[in-house]
Length: 574
Image: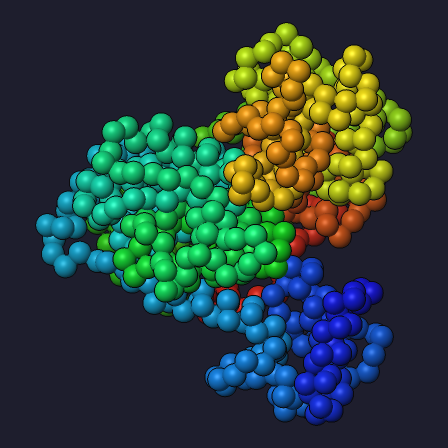
């Protein structure tokens, strides 16, 4: 276990007072629980304690009844307000247990609206098939996803970059409108303002003139989150006023935030979740989208649902006996329209996902793929020079334009992504070095020098800037302003921010760049995992270069992120 924090210690003392001696091991176990939460888990599997060598415990069959006797712990079916809940061999903070149960219950209670006569079924099929071209393959999974979204109040669409998630959503909106299945406004939301705006622009550019009003916003703003308060403005007593909510980049949403969204959805509101289940999980606890999208599960639907999908789409839909009912809500988009057969990025992403380091290294070193490059980290000075060269070359066109759109396009054409935030190969270290190199000679002491890239690090409802939003400094006369894709903001009004020539891979989620440079540490690290590397690689649209050791690359591809949760096992029982 990691060194206990001040919170761990204070919380364990609080539980000790509440327990009143019933379970002397509770303070120690609670420190393990809170340490697990910091690592992204939403519960503590009690058998994991027996893998530790720094303490002795009674047999687990004796430990669980001992914990259950504590006044600080309740069973799932007990009414109360204890800080902890024990469910079999799983120990939770109550808040996380209730959030997980709220999500589970809502999904299991979400209905599938099967047409009760052949005419309605034919109408759905004809409407959808008119929106999709004749497929090149036996099963068009975009069409299947659209059929699921029409039938189901709640649906999940997962796919890698370029698989057509937003294209599919645009056609779903058209179909729902033509079939008279949405009445009222539609909310387009994402964890970051940039991702929400990109979703809105993409959807609006594809649907043409539909009698639908859209509003794009961050999930925080959608729910009415307020600074300093956890309880959002919208909840079960004040539900969201939308007929349909579409949430993009759902993999970035932590458990508690997703639970708040579920709590705020009205009885007649539809929900469509978009994301890539192979990406990084959220920074905070949970892997909600991975759990909901059936990561590692067989999501083939039951025969009766597959038969209806097949009737609607006139194409073969696989099925299996005994499939969980929750598989009805899921579609996995499999064909990438961005990465063609000659794309090294596409091949590399697949090799990483398949856990094949030999294939990944072969691709990176092969002369057949000019869009991907590996530079083995041997000399830190050479690495720094390479970073300076690539950055200077990518941003050089900024010197010859004052057009805002061109400035933003140039800034978004290149980004450096790192695994760590603080070490010699981190975003902070690279930004510090590049600031010395990239600062204009005539602005040696100016904080907001021209073309300084920034990333916002806290939400600001006053300015509309959200954590993760990016921009670049421009001059308005003598006054510096931050130029973003939505607006320009005086630097005097900026919330907390950092220089962003480089950013962590976590911060890059929801963004795409023409060219990226991925810098990994020379030695393997617990945070450098398959999901992290896959997320970084798939941020690139045109080309990427990786600076790393082969040892770190191999470690990343062969190590996956595991987050303890019981949500997937409850939704997809074996």
